[in-house]
Length: 326
Image (cartoon, rainbow, N blue to C red; front, side, top):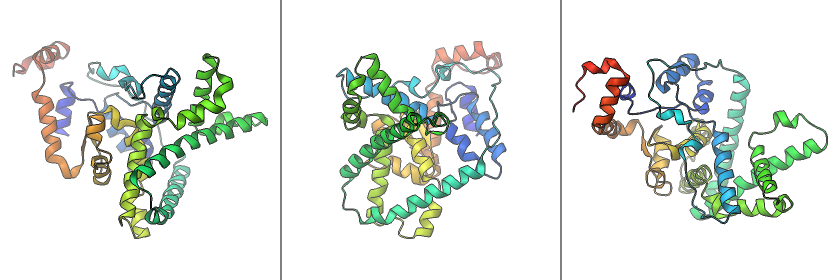
């Protein structure tokens, strides 16, 4: 923490928090202390909610698809981060502390999701799919689920069930955005053909959150086929946070210079089939790589420019007394 705090003071690193950090904290005994710690280290910086990032990425890719632009996704930092992440921090920050809510409901949902995951492991172990086939399956299912959620919400509204506006999955709005984009181009009549075709296209496959999620799940399935987690009880214990971790990593890794996580997720992100550093330029660290992590922090500090050091002394007079010429 001393090393991180120094780099935060020197304005050389930002450690934004995400809604997932807060959601996961709800399951811990010392939840409030943990959330306060997260906010303190973040110093007011935060990621956009995962569903906002996903929605932004998919809409951008869809617009490129409609305009026959290259399939390569043009990543922009503003997809996931407010521009204020580059502002010089003040001596204090203001954060909104949210008390834990609906913890028992969240816990039940998490237990149910993990149980479904564990029940699926035997099917994955017996699967003859290749990694590439699993990638295709993951991406196809992602598009199918988005369309099904939209169809269910729309169907409820048609029958007069306006509570669908409140309790439908947030991701149901993704297809709504695509339909609106078609209406702007006066192509709404083509929605039933164009949107499914988009979800099967290389443009959708290149969306960072979809691509990385598919790679992580497909790599995990490959390991299951190779014999990982044969014991259901141990699997249930080890994989209790897996779904949260995949969602979190798939959403934010593409926008990070470095990502510190647990050993299991770090190993998946570094697997040759994922290779987060090569694919997205994000270095991945865990407690088993603390030496490399400290080296990376020292490298950040050593590359501070003279202009930055000079600006630091003007913005923060307390640094005027320090030697920043080196």
